[in-house]
Image 1 (cartoon, rainbow, N blue to C red):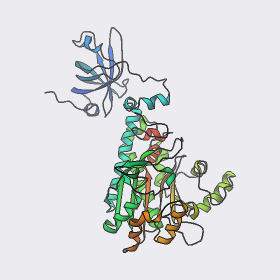
Image 2 (tube, rainbow, N blue to C red):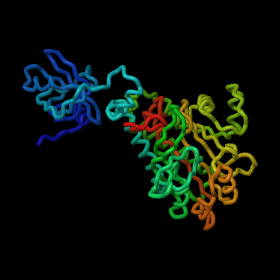
Image 3 (cartoon, one colour):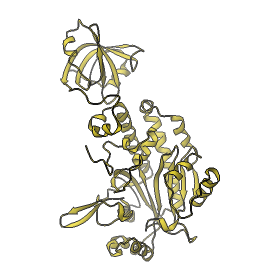
Image 4 (cartoon, rainbow, N blue to C red):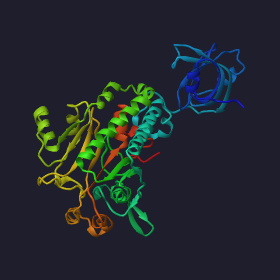
Length: 427
């Protein structure tokens, strides 16, 4: 039996006979030569068939996305897409392909309609590899810090990020919701494991059509006992620097395919700027003439303008208490909460949000009542405060937003395999 190797392994070998397999990424030819650019998950290579070859007639049946097994001899050729050419000695058509519906001139909406096919593109393949590395780097960072991975339930009985963005589902005879975050359960885990993290599906029924919002995404979250806002801020900075370094090290070729300016990513190695919400408002008024009423949350336009002034992510702390979730405690100044957002450079917006956790049951209950919630539904959460509570903190990182930043792409929909939005739920 022939031993097939990946295209990248063949390119690394550089010469000699090889057996490879994959799909026809491109094909063209004349009565003198047939060219097939073969792709697999690792790379592409140009294959050449001559008329006198016994497989010439078989090669004429090859169309874009046909699957093939090919044997041949490698030859260096700087004119070829990846610097080598395969002189074909044998070719076997495994799966023929109808006329492939994706061409250069199709619309972005059409590409979303045929996402199950477009995911084969070199662009999306590169993005998915970067995504894999971001996920793995997140996990590796917290493992090296002594954290335990903890899996939360996706079906949850209460809201945690505001009732307006809940997805309601039928649960036998009861009503449940898809997880907005792992947080309430992550908090429970630290009284056992002390330091925990998760990578889990997250759902937000946000009525937004922007390039930054998805209805389903992966949230990378952490929670730690005995941690304050300063320690939390340090972790956001160290984590993001760790992720950037890993992507730059392992995904150089993918970043080239995506034409990403890696010099901009390298700047994230510098210390991150840290500012309070009030300092951000002062800077935006001074530098950009933006007069923002104190107490309003930062919108996309404010985040974008803030990011223009710095090459690194910006850690913004102490947002107005009145607009924060019920579990974010007051800072003691009578106005702000012990919380943070991390704003990515280059206009990629908020990529991390977190806080210390409030320990005052009465205060949190009053906030929930104002939101139309019944505090009795949170009895399990109050138990965490009643039985040996300790200071603790945590944050959530939007994986797709970080991937979009790493890849330099302009829409978060391309940072996930099959995007779900308020208008997109197929394929």
